[in-house]
Amino acid sequence: MKLVKLLANLGYGSRKQVAWMFREGRVTDAAGDVLYADDQVGHADVRVDGEPLDPPQGLTLMLHKPVGYTCSTKDTGRLVYDLLPPRFRLRAPVLSSVGRLDRETSGLLLFTDDGQLLHRIISPKAALPKVYGAALAQPLRGDEVALFASGTLMLESETTPLKPAVLDVIDDTHARLTLTEGRYHQVRRMFAATGNHVVALHRSRVGGLGLEGLAEGDWRALDAADVSALMDAS
Image (tube, rainbow, N blue to C red):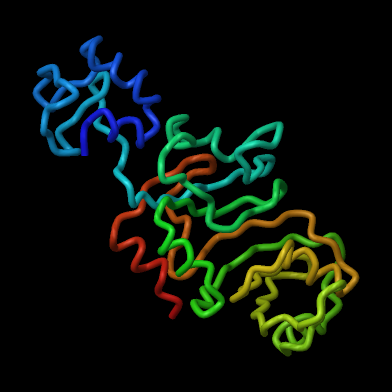
């Protein structure tokens, strides 16, 4: 792939804008020598303004989403993409969030530009466990563990019951819930079905991948071992 197209696909600008970057000497190799648009250089050896290129196509990353950010590219207010390098919003293929966390939910949010991986993650066949910590407005009434595990709970306006879910009670108003599906606002609606209200919700894990060591608002690219851990639902 020509360097101009490579940089444009990574979101550094339009092809015209990237061509100007070459003319201005902003694109160099690892040794600092100026590169030209028709040079043949490996991705890892290219620098823009002295910095290595962003990861190539096939990028998958995890973000520790704070409360108050929306999983969208177009809504007003604070967006999850504001927490990533601005270029990531312009990449081709598009860097998409893998599912969503609502504005008031924090925790692990995945992004990828790998369409096949995205479908593997969200496929019902994968049944990847997702772990949430919930703080509740009212004390648990006592039957939630059995109800959520029963596979019979029907949410309002739906026609099929939820798959069994595992509820671990921490104390009267705090619990950890593990799901293997992802219906709209599912955790909040499950507790609402018991007459309760979720006041704080945090996703700590998807598959075999957790947030350990990642501060709120930070992100990191996943390597092959991370993706393997993610898809390990054991």
